[in-house]
Length: 352
Image 1 (cartoon, rainbow, N blue to C red):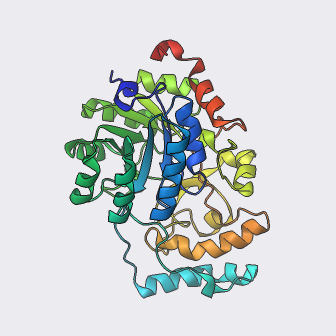
Image 2: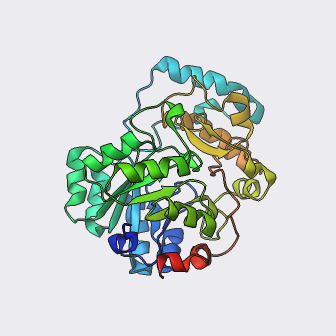
Image 3: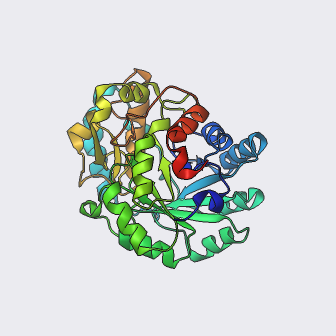
């Protein structure tokens, strides 16, 4: 079996999933200092914000960490598509008393670009991960210059083989149970998406690089099962959402602590791309999958003012409350404690 700890320079085979919108450097620092691999999601950060967060990480830990970026193509949507989406949302704007002119312009989530690469070159993070494939060859070559470990997500065997052929150091096998955006990039057919413990052994057999299991893993038993199926380590996100280091909103935290956390769905109505979250009003009424939603990430811009107004009233009706199918590991404890506890009962397996 591959030694993920040696590859990434970490003590525990635990990677904290990057969760854009609900965390910053604080969570990454806590997990890295506890011996896992903390992650900084950069999809929603400007280059200036990236610089600040990376400075914070460098000043608080000498341990390895990773930065994560989206690699989607710049969206193309016709005026008719955008108008149809606004019309679909119009009743909600009227109900909440929100002016539709408050909808922000621009995509809101940018793919990895040269400005972000400029910032990274100053800090040379030891691990760089990507979602939705890999960046262009020229950008990837810039990243390779300081020889970081490069990781990306695969949701099918075909995607894993595609990534391996392009020289990634490890592959995250993202099962359909995982919270947040699906990493799918070779197809937009959601029927290709399968569960972690079906996907994992198939990818392990197909590739020679280490494979990291993600999706539905929330405790030591899940880690044990993933390892038995050939995983070199695991990536865990949902379990961290109640930690004090997360910036998870009050409605999101309340949902995670309620029976609602057992009801998740893959939806595109919040961003325009399939992502798993706790079912709320907008998912129930418009989705979960809508043919009207414009391509990622344009759908999110029109929903943003509704989310802001609803959250100001304590409601998560229009919020992307990303969560996996197994929220049983969510605990309101410091992230360092949760990281250590996750492997406490499987120490013999990893010899830590």
